Length: 204
Image (cartoon, rainbow, N blue to C red; front, top):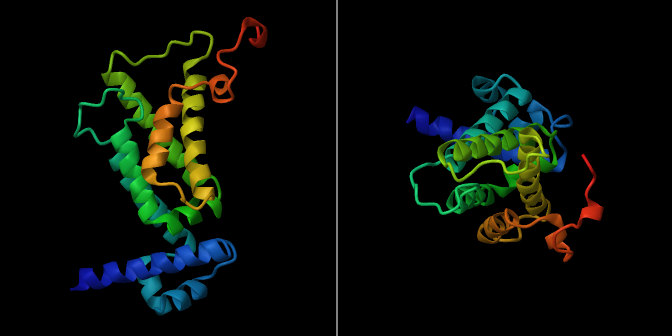
């Protein structure tokens, strides 16, 4: 019974935090704001968290752990293209969609820390896929591996952040499909120019 009450209280605090983050941001909110919005007393809040920063850290870590579990899921080894496997991306996007106000708060009304940590999970995902699939490796000798990885991470991260900025109006399935398609397209192909010719390339 105690655990059930604590879970319910944690949820009320998270909902209050999400509301206040989207309304006024972290620096402007106070513990009094949180307790008033959650309809709890200050002692209850301090029983769970040290301060608002501790609360944010706990909520952020919980979300990152869940996303990591979904994105690094290896229960299905049948993916034809293992780089950013569609089922894993879709599961993660569904998770975000179900808690959209919280993720809006953490990405649009927060510093870049959450987005940076999410990129680290994607980076781990790439490394895991490359290490176990000998058909996946870097084929761009003129682009160092760390830069190539950053290009891939930036593309996926930018798509997801734009989706959030638009309020998650597109379905998770549509965004997962878009990410899958983007893996095969260069910027030139996206704007209808095809592949760049030699005059567009900077000599190295």
